[in-house]
Image (cartoon, rainbow, N blue to C red):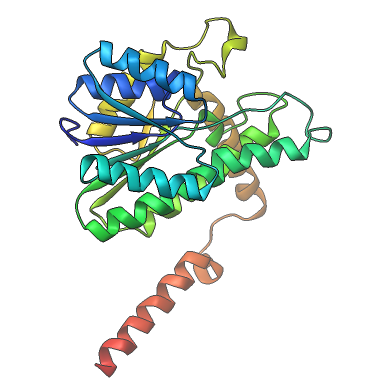
Length: 277
């Protein structure tokens, strides 16, 4: 993927990772449209981007509201004639609490923004991309929390990122090949959301520069933070251990495998349809 002269829409683009993507992609020649809920921060961000010679615009938008997202898409296509890339970066956290004591209303709000907001943008922009029939890309910004529980007492946030992993994997299975799907996996990166770490996170531009190189290489996962594999391996070794002990592989064990069964059903249906034609 070449971002030069591409129209890129970035949700949650006024600060942190979203702003860094806007700046670095803009420096590669992209035309960027950033969104967010705070008008003052959007105005500040676009002013800063223009100082960096970035072709930048903004639109106030709450990605958890479908009407806002529809207006965003209409505005982006009117502004640029077409959109080439959507980066779903908008996200929020919630106060730490044990799972049993967590405020479920706050957790629902986290899901509305982090998961359903992303899914809404995927639907609205994805339909336009498919209708246009031209190469385009959707990148969802997930988290290391897609793969393991990175932050204690954060079940609502972690669950929203686990859900994004599942949705994004499903998305790449059921969209045309000309629509590239990617999942960006930040670890601990400097941002307003992570200010509790007191500057121990990866510098934001360093993270986004590494992610962009993988995005340009059409990777599905864009990753950093190598130590994450320690936590990922711990989780999956536990899963593997359970299967090895209680459900070990054996000949014919695909008899009840759902993907194998569905694949056979689809192949049979296609064969019947071809025979009828």
